[in-house]
Image (cartoon, rainbow, N blue to C red):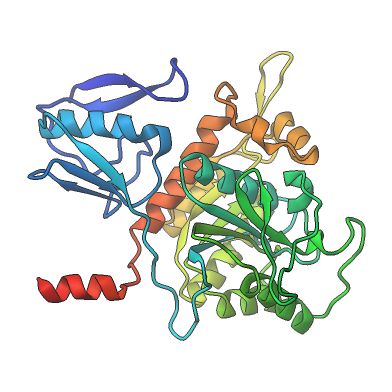
Length: 360
């Protein structure tokens, strides 16, 4: 098989494999490397390409790839992010299409950091994104985003989400002081979370990223059973102990029949800034082994990087999204793969969809 080179949009030195015209059509995404499934709809007759997930600056690369492989002279593109099915008898949240729960089997693996990077990645790709800090006992999202204002309540009943550079956010950390603990029992935690998510005026969100508390106990189980979660993402490190706990989280989501979009391996490696030596401090290939064993995708691997720690602690995550930052590629791929896998799930049919089917 022969291949053509084309440049990725974010960096001139990055390149992308695209099949030549004489190659057979492939169901592998030319950017993310995943199975396409139903994530892209090509109408060759009308020369139209519809994306079911956000593509951002990658859109032109997709158009070039499809024009080449399908031998089309012109091709137009559009994006339509659909609302997907959730468990029966759970009411949807107004203003939210899809809720992605970010979970870990144990604390200390960087779950909240990954939640922020996933939200910022989807936003960078062009989606409308919200971020809910559901980690009641340790709400760290406000500090990571550099936001400390209290949410406004125009009617004294509901709250406006706090804007963080275009992200719609909500956290108990906005209401409590930064050092004030939430000393609550399980029932109070669940009630507080339900109020936060239901009483917030979310506006036209494609994705709401929900940073869950770590663990697989009664609180986590109650949350995902009462909230209309579309799918989940698991965060782990390569360490054996973290992987064992991540497997428990996977089993929890399987038990309640919530799809898992994939695994993100955090702190996968460390590269010394002085000498360039690479060290696998917490082990190697743990996330990949888990993905292979349980047949879930590996969405990405994030290194142990001082920039992540510095800018998250300083409330400046946007610095990581500058075009020249080396972590941007990995973070965008991570977000792209998660959105693409979600787009392959069954959609929630609307009245408009039903009428269209009736006409057919």
